[in-house]
Image (tube, rainbow, N blue to C red; front, side, top):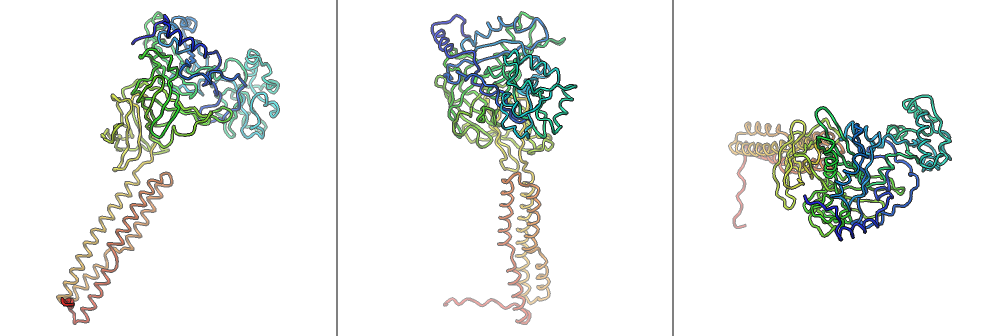
Length: 620
């Protein structure tokens, strides 16, 4: 791979000067909001964070705006710290990112390091920020809507119980921050005798208005939920993350089986974590290069989506005009797959919707400088379309699949214990309607989808010939993807029943015609007794009313099983039954029996023999 030299040419120097003019040490665009809980959190959205200076980078040209990058080092070996790794690691990263990154390397906070050593795969924003102290205000407090910060809290809350240790820690950090009283909130703190578990029991006390707890504990409160009020103190993970665009957590693990570096990237605007990238190292001498290489592999360039239609989108690559090497890790080549993401803020800058768009991907089709055109593939309606406004951020992240396959699992919507067994998956070519059979799901609703030359595979789920879902998938990106679909088994049972009824109608029509012909033959031959026996046999055949009543009961049973969860299935079942009723009305009616009864009476009136039909007058 070609690398940018550290010796600046005139062009590199000019570009770097432009970048430096725009870059400052203030928070990045992604810092506009940072203190709201993740969507999965059970806590209610928090109030406004302490006021900060406006972010001058918000008006920077996107294509000249370098990434603000924080690298957190998590290590249990005192030899491997941010201080010891800083210089060689920075030198390594400058080869690729000299003009593209503004890099800070620090030791990971204790809470982040603990979470990283527990499981890199399970890292989330809530998990790494769980130890941040916050004030949890009850959502049913009569003035909850008016409590917007620690400055307004003392007007509406009489007391904030907390543990002695938490109180001392917060007051010390508030003094370091430069606001020892925390806007007057410090006077409301009331220490209790007991630990965090004892403190949590206060939440169920009707007289409790608010508690000083960790963010992680606040997210567990329910009935009522907690409105989270952040504190103006030092050392907050949420505040630190807010100052950067990308955060890399580097875990250095040494075990008897070997030494290993694991890196995960966090995109701070969307609070999205990438895949864990790992690499072994043999000695302390190799470690900086291994960390740098692994961080580079974990890095995913960002594209700002400027315009989006139903099937296409256009955007601009972050720092695109600072990229001089076509092999740069910050570039987005044509043919690449990207993950679209969206963030919608309320008027206070807190996210009301955040994260990736499910079952949706972009493919880069054209490049013109930093601008890129993309095709949009989605398994669901909506997504990227919508009016532009200052509260909505639409982004796309370059995807780098690291695995050979992804296990796809299908189950009934809302029921993980009910896999969709034997469902067929087909792949459609992106630029044509050609379909190829991929396979069937196994006993657990699973099918391995392998990586191909094309990063994106457009899959269709079928059952009984009916298309149930479209699932765009980038194989190798994740170990498993789960699709909860509305099962089609009940519709298939209804279809099988209707086919049986239709076949029965066809058989019944044939029997009725055969009996009618035999009855008339017996009447013409004067065999009245045999004709009446056949007529009685015809009367004993199922009637239109009997078949219609049975169909009505079965239709009710099928619709009850389907419920209201799938109007499309209900519509299909209704159509099948309606068409069959129309067929029944046309083919099975009492006219045949009435005509035969009339013929029997005519035969009796004629002395036991059906008279010949009068010949038509040819001259008439």
